[in-house]
Amino acid sequence: MKHKYLKTVLCSTVTLFSFTALANSTIVKAENIDTAKSAAVSRTTEPGMTVTPAKRFAKEGYVFKLARNAVVYPAVNDVINDTSKPFGKSWVKKMADKNVKFKITEFGTSKVELLAHIVDQSGKNHGWVSFFNGDLYNKNVKKKALQPLIKAELKVMDLQFEGKKPSLIPAKNEARKLQGQNKKIANKSIKEIKGWIAYKGDLAYTHYPSLLVGK
Image (cartoon, rainbow, N blue to C red; front, side, top):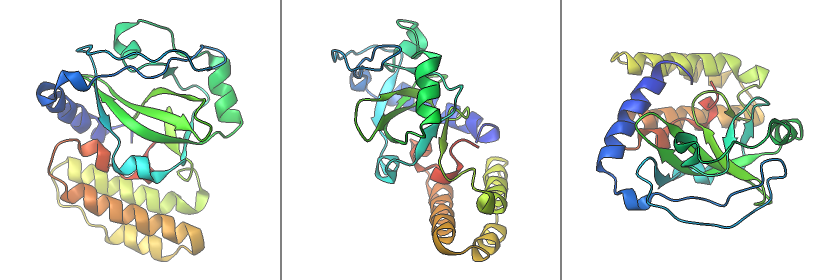
């Protein structure tokens, strides 16, 4: 989701940034800009970015894809320090056009950024990408059959942000209309929204509904 919820996440990120030990910051494997080949690994306590485990998202598996115009950086601190260039556009388009699927392993947070570390099944292609601007999306988010459900779920997220009590009834009604794998995806997503609404702790973005990533 690229609109209202992002503001809430950034506020949560500021709180996290203020209270999380900066020693958790890290630099991941760097990759050649156009070939994305692995290079040396180094660690840093760079104060600009804090890295935390992806928790539930890491268990989602390889269900995320890159948009053709995504901006992907080799290392988390590169995003705010301009210490290196993002991967070349040709590499990103190659990942998108070949439908390479990624999983999220970590989140990088600063006062103004929320990034996801992604890696493919081969382990050779990985990097850091913005979590909420549409550069990364769930492979199921574009399914035509799921669009009414997604619309209903986004309404729930908006109402929650506005401080109103959201109802999941419209989303549940849409889920009942689905069959097979689509129904499983819908029921799982509704369960995740319930969990997100109920969660009151830090790192709220780690409980964000997986299906809505990219909306």
